[in-house]
Amino acid sequence: MNEQIIALNGLTKSYGKHRGISDLTFSVNAGEIFGFIGPNGAGKSTTIRTLMGLIRPTGGSAAIFGLDCQTQASEIAKNVGYLPSEDSYYENMKVHQLLQYTADLYGMDCWSRVNDLAARLDLDIYRRISDLSLGNRKKVGIVSALITRPKLVIMDEPTSGLDPLIQQAFYELLEEENRRGTTIFLSSHVLSEVQRLCDRAAILKDGRLVGIQSIKELRESGYKKVSVTAKSAIPNGFFDLAGIADYKENANQTSASFMYNGNIASVMDKLHSLPLEDVLLEEPLLEEIFLHYYE
Image 1: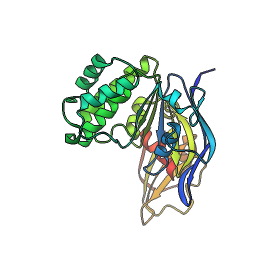
Image 2 (image 1 turned 90 degrees about the horizontal axis):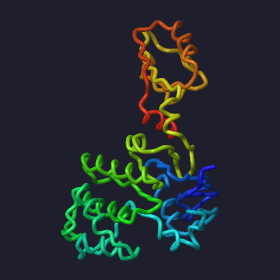
Image 3 (image 1 turned 45 degrees about the vertical axis):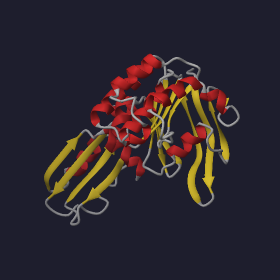
Image 4 (image 1 turned 30 degrees about the horizontal axis):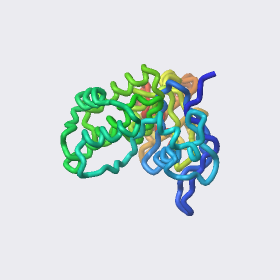
């Protein structure tokens, strides 16, 4: 049985009338890169802040390394590298001073590690925090989260503000850390990076867990993307088949497109009875498969 590094059991956080998170139950295994995905406002940051002991839940529980995230947060923090979605730094400090401060908190000499990470992310550690762009501030957070080589890394929207070249360098860093045995919990709304990095992903919508999917299984799923153009209007309910999702048609109902997960012969049988102009059958992008969860 895989060791559980993170375990949520009915985790709930409400803000009066405002949506938070509701009844989240899932676990993250040792050595995984686990994606936590959903649109902005879905509750990803609330979940992470609760895991880090920064806010108290209104129901349920959360544990990291088997320790309670509320009562044992300081013990958990010794082995967790955390990157929040929004930073809060001492603006007058220089980057190297801030990173030294982080290393000192852990009682570690991380200077060679700082220099290596800074070089790979093209970060000038002798600049003042207040002079940094959004992307460079994000780099500071990434270095701060990784310098102590923690057992668990929790990152909330880590690539926002990073240019494409630095994003690639960041992905390579995470993959290297994971090969060392580090467990990574990655919150993102960028599906392409979840596809590249993650083993599994939890899908969050309106504060609730929609599902947990293996990325490998999604890639190997039987989903097909079907696009149809007919010479006359497609009858209402014509493609009323189990397994159809994301159905769209044009105003005069002569064109339709949809995702289909099932025996494609069922769709082909339907198509034989239509006066067709064109049919396109293709493999959907992983992003398109994920998006049908948000309908």
